[in-house]
Length: 221
Image (cartoon, rainbow, N blue to C red; front, top):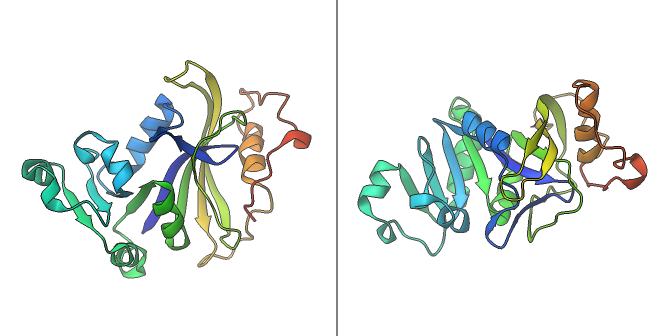
């Protein structure tokens, strides 16, 4: 099954200047929990931002027209289970084929890889950072014609961004594509869904300034 996983904020920003927008411990631990032992799919830019072009404990597939297997240290390729291909169609169709429903793969970036793969993703695992101020130069763009339903709220808590020491409310949203399920798609923006999570976790208060009048409208339904 093909899924995508990302950390986004109210502007749907995911990165800036070749780096992640946030470095939040709880999000990183959630990412590790979800993807460990599975396949991760990434573009060359994301791979270059990682030590040895890979994440340990996972099968790493790099989609690139310029990067070749021979560009990497042979030992790193073997020890870190790295494959490089320019055939994104073959990768996407393999993991989105229902015949391989027990084989999980997670798209982890960057922006263009997300855009191409999202129509084939069964699930989205999003850490939503309740922050409207920070924006980036890379975004998690969900086309208007892709509809998802809320499957699970994985967590809703206060956590600290190690890059800035700022504390943010973060919400873990698991969304499922409607292409093969019957429930009605989300009628609220992603911002509304994340903000309303406090009803299930009432020990966390959503900041009062995030009212419906000031919400960021996200094309999500």
